[in-house]
Amino acid sequence: MKSLWYGGTIYTMEKEGHTVDSVVVEDGQILDTGSYQAMKEKYIDAKEQHLKGATMFPGFVDSHLHLIGHGEKLIRLDLSMCTSKEEIIKKIRLAETDVSGNDWLIGEGWNENRFSDPSYLTKEDLDEFFPDRPVLLKRICRHAIVVNSKALHAAGITKQTPDPEGGVIVRNENGNPAGLLHDKAQELVYQVLPTVDSAYLNRALRSAIQDCYEKGLTGGHSEDLSYYGLAANPMNAYQEVIANEGLLFRAHLLVHHLALDEWLQLDKKESPYIEYGAMKLFADGALGGRTALLKVPYHDDPDTNGVEIHKEKELYELVEKARQHHMEVAVHAIGDLAFEKVLSVLEKLPPHKGRHDRIIHAQVVNSELVKKAAKLPVCLDLQPHFLASDFPWAIDRLGEERVRRSFVWKTLLKAGIPCAGGSDAPIEPVSPILGIQSAVLRKSSQPGDETVYNEGECLSVFEAVSLYTKGSAAIIYKENKRGMIKKGYDADFTILDKDLFQMEKEYLHLATVQQTVIAGEIVYRRKKAGAS
Image 1 (cartoon, rainbow, N blue to C red):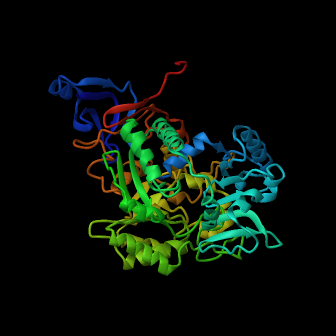
Image 2: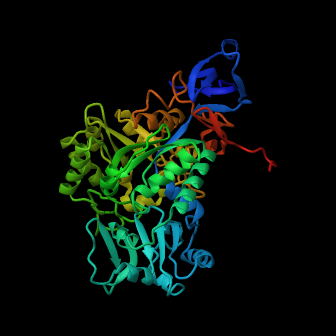
Image 3: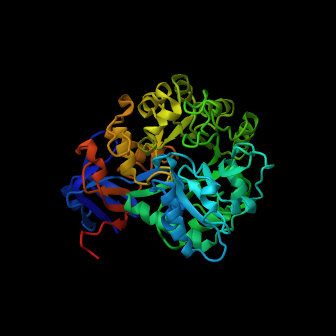
C-alpha cells in the first residue's frame, strides 16, 4: 500500500534548507519525492497523509544510549531530580513499601551536583534507615554507586578488599569502605545482585521504546548486553519486544567485550530492526566522579587524574581480539589521556579497509589529538546535553584553561571527523530535541545561568540536526539507506509541530513531536489536548 505525505515542510537533510513538496512511501521505503500534484497523478492509488502544516525530518536516531537502562529508569526509582540527601532518603523510604522481604532496593540517577552541599552519599547516610535490607543507588553517570553496609557485606567488601584494576573503593579515614564504588569496583556488587527475569527486561525495553517514540526517535545504538546476566537475556528481550511483539524500532546493538565470547556462540537473528555492531569497551570513567582519565590532575582534586580502566597492554589485546573477529571497536573515552591512549592503539591496529572505529564522548581533547583523530578511520559519538548538565561544575573539575578545549563539537566537525549525536540515556534525557538545542546554545540547564560556554563551539541548527540524522546513519554504514529523505531510503520520519530551522534558538525545546514513523508505519501520534 502506497502512502503520499504532503501538506507541510519536508526537509530532506541532503543539504541545508533543501525541501521537497511530498514523499511517496511503499513497503517501508521512500518510493519517490516531488511536487504534490505530480506525485498524486503518478501514484493514484496512494493513501494521502496530510501533515497539516507540520515539519517532517528524516527519523532522528540516538547514536549512543542504554535502551534497557533507560526503561529501567522509567519503571524504577528515579532519583535524578533530587536536590538533597534528605530528599533521596525520603524517596527510597517510600519506595521500600513496594519491595518485598529482604529484596534489594535499587535507585537510579542521584547527582550530588544538584545538592546545595555537593558531597557524595555514603553508607552512613543509608545504614540508619536500612540496616537489614541491601540498598544500591546508581549515580547519574553510572560510573559510581553508593551502597549500604548490608550490600557491602553481601558483596564481601571489607577493609582488606583491594581496589580492583580500573576501579576504586572509596574509604573513610579509618580505611573502611565508605559505600562509594567507582567504575570496575561496582562489579563487586553487581555480580551478587539477583538476576532479573525476562518479564522485567521485556517491560523495561517496551517502556523505553514507547518513550523514544514520544521523543521522535526511530532508532538507537544501544549498549546493554553485559548488564543482565547472560548476554542471551537482553538479546531475547529485543527479539521478543521488537520482532515478536512488533514494537518497531531500529536497534543497533554494541557488544560489550565482557559479553563477546558468549555472543559469538549465540544465534544472532538480525533484521532491519535488530542488528549488531562494534565491540564496546571503556578506557576511563566520568568527570562527575573524577574518574575520567586526564593528562593533568583534576583542578579541584590535584591528588587524582582519574582512572585507567584498562592498562595499555590490555587495551591493545582487547582491540586485537575485536580485529580477530572482524569487528570494529566503540570505546568510551572522556578524558584527554584516555583519548590519547585509545588513538595510539587504533593507529597500531586499524580496522579492516572501508570500516571505522567509534570513540564515545570525546569530551576533553586538545588540538594535537584532534589532528591525530582526523587522520584515522574514526567517528565520534557526541552527547550534546552533557554540556547542559555538566556546566558550570565542569569548570571546577577542569579549570578555566582546560574547559576551553572541552566539548569542542565545532572544532571536531571542522577537522572533518564524522560525528553522530546521542544522549547516553538514562544518564541524560533521551530527547533529541534537547540534544539539538544544547549543541546550538551551549548553555547550562541550571536555572538563571545564561552563560554561553565557549560560544565559538556552538553548532548551527543544521549541523546539530545532522548529528541525529545523517551522522547516526553514517556511523553504522547506513548513509545510503537512512538519515535523509531520499528515493530508496528507509521511510523513517520525525514529524514536529514547529520548524526547527525557523524558530528562535532559545525556544527549540518547545517543539513537540506530532508523529513518529518507522518503515512507513505511524508508531506514535500525539493526542490532541483534552483527548483521552
